Image (cartoon, rainbow, N blue to C red; front, top):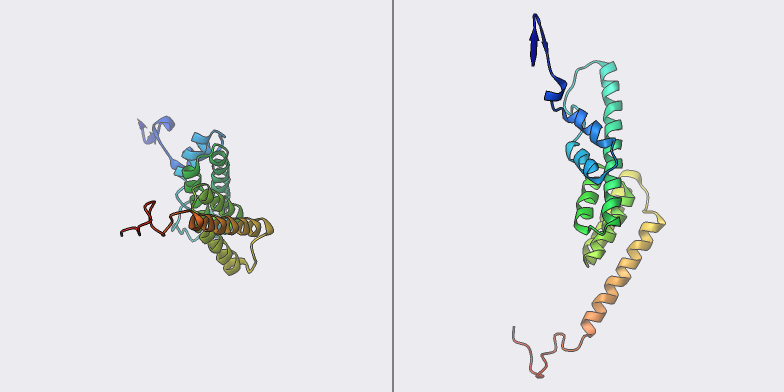
Length: 184
């Protein structure tokens, strides 16, 4: 801070403003920049602030939408990066954050279903499909698109095949190699 007579000046380099930092990070394309930008985006700009001036409210509404779209785009890029690098846990975290901001983003639901499958969590993937179906039906009155339904059917089929294979393994719930029943 610099005082000059009746004026007080702030040194821009000495200030950290999340709005400005977000803008700087979102302009980059590196995963660490995108991650920082998404960490800085913690909700709508000036949430709860009401000036009561129509011109300001119109500007604020537009700016909120613009920033939200930039945050969603950054999360999508980050999700694609994690999927491409087989970073399943990170991908799940990002897909979950993406859906928290936009629960109707069907592509994020599909990505999350696929990531759960990579972990062998077929039941979680099937639950995610149901979450997707409910959100789309409730908010838009539509069904999931063909790609989402096809993925659901594939996961359901694989989960059923996996359960059948597990049940068919020798010794499963029938005792041990000595022929005696297992003790619980």
